[in-house]
Image (cartoon, rainbow, N blue to C red):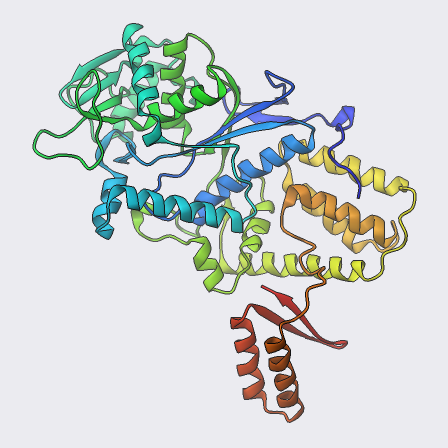
Length: 482
């Protein structure tokens, strides 16, 4: 197979768009031996929806792109199992406690169940597991130590409900979104954050450590130098990323909703504590939209999960294919029609691979066309992960019958799938049908010959329930495993 792990051509160095500088530049890691990557993970109080997973797919594409360029990647993903309040403006209840009350379970059961579900869904979408998975509740001591550093440096103050970060002490607060401290506070006072604690010095100040309520005991709380309580949401990511990747690291990713508050506050507290630049490159994925709705939100109680797609008869990787059709920084509209089109395209690709596999020539010398495709592949993928261009290249290769022999085409498509990860060779299999399925297919064929279409349809549905799809072609029946 053609190796795409070799060094990229000199004129195709990896370029990425940095949200901090608002420019696209060649990626230069701190350590050439290992790239450090931190991704904001799920808050595990409910299912991750497909809008969430669009971000995780983009982050997986970034990691695969780094690896195919020859970098080793240390990928850290956090699990928020405490501290994320129902309002990002530092108000409301802890989402984990809300989930526990909703399902009449313990907070630990809720966190464990939805953590497991998240990774099961991620696997169905071919999202690689991170190098390190870190739970917030396992790192309370690290968070307390980081807050103590901030306290020593003069960035904190204490009010009735907790210890807060004083954003006015940091000259460049808000730089990630191109706003200074004064302008950002004025904008928020105009209505962006409506729930404002009057004891806070500045509207942009945020909680580092929240005190437990005096009238009731929280389900999750810890001792600290300031009193019993729990960490703020923002301090969790700073403490865990610094612990595993260092005080300055390469890449930090998340959704486009993160820069105004969460990532802005991460930068502030991290740089105030260490006196160093926190992250060199910030990457953010755009929303998945749903017609008139701007985005899917768990708070609205109306979400689509990976399991919902499966129940509607879709291959989860059809959704991954759909995500590839738009650049990660562009909004992508979800409709069932778009998803069906993506599934049709995916199945067509797999059928093309199956047919190629049945007629592979002996491996010969790579043609100039192969080298041209590899060059164009790197040019597209290294242009800030331009997956739509990669798909265009794939379909050009599929449709042009004269450019190269079947083996070259087959192996080149397999190599491209190292990035796409949509299992285009899934139908290329030596698996045998189970005897029970063969018997059902034979019964269906007899029903079709007798023009008993009702029975034939019923048998087709029964076969599907067992995990197999049938396709009636001019050459006979084809089957594929779901």
